[in-house]
Image (tube, rainbow, N blue to C red; front, side, top):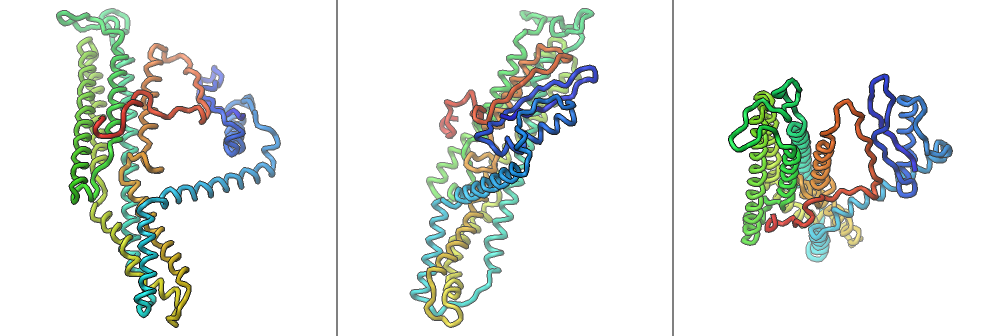
Length: 430
């Protein structure tokens, strides 16, 4: 195993401490062990620690044989993985249907329309299929990036709100600077003047509920398909999805409103109005980013463009059958290799259908069935971990050394969502 150390800055009179340690398993992750671990250790030793970082990397790894082995090993893994990704998008029922249409069209022209064989231009394919699909993919990817930015803002705002409720302090009623223990505000009738010790934990529990509610909302199946408008069963499905979105959005809004109540509790115990206003401003920004995420969830790219692209992919083989027949027979119009024409027609159709499936997979930026969409479970789980880390560090002084953290190997890393494993991602169970 090779130890990779990431260092943080400390004052000159203090030594550099390692706060994060990640280990790469050399047997299962040879590429990371050979290239990433070795380079990071070399950089930290030469730049930060004057050669005091432990080096578990063997000397033979730095030779030309190691570089040759790892470079070609990585290349083989990348090529194999690329084929796996292509097969993931090709092996679908829609691709099979489009492939059958392309082969049947060539066979029908060969049997009944042999005299129609001619060389045709591909300009129509460029304008009718490729251009709309590439534009739709670009728009869908831009929507994914906007969703990531909004989720990043939501995470940062939640961390600041949690820190405010757990750590922010003010001048108390005595000479000590601890308004949480000795507030300046007068107590209300039937209430204590001092803030409860559990206020930070209660705010944390409320924020965790908010994270769970956002996750549940984002995992609701998407609507906006053509079948949701023109078929009876599709309209029924869209009705249930819309109901789940409405209920989920209301749940999130109610929890945000309760966070305002937590701020009012601090203000009633003496929190200065300007600091309370700052927390409320955080909540306003949080609400604004949540509404941006909700709009990205409920609205799609143009339905007409998506429908036109799908119809073009399935119907163009019947119009371009004469071209593939000409490709088989040539200018002489004699009997040729019809098998080659079928294979070439199927290949072109599969590639166009793959573009269509890529666009469909990116249509919902929070889908769990695509490689390039937002990983909702992972992001929400990391947000929970950040909130828990903030709350666990509340009792420590800001001058203390940061806690030493160790990350588990990828085999042991838990990315599943901890608290809602009993929930199903269906509108009925939201």
